[in-house]
Length: 91
Image (cartoon, rainbow, N blue to C red):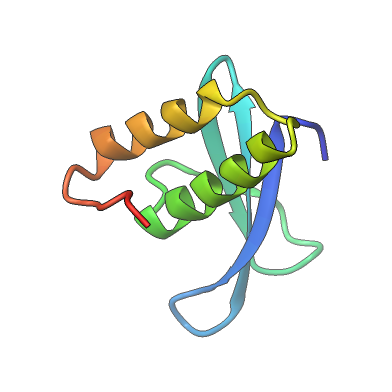
């Protein structure tokens, strides 16, 4: 995966594991998901809050290791606030 791509796994609605990755393109994050290894990646038009929080956690860890600029943390938090105003971003 490229430097601007972050991937993780999460449980799906039916109990199956869903593979998700996010790619930063032009200052925006695009989310993709698939169920199995050889399935095609499907773009998620409206990723759930769970995926945004997983992305935020990964971005924070990468920024601490200087793999991403610290300003990216605020960009992701702002994107979450715009889409999910009721979400709490405090630990």
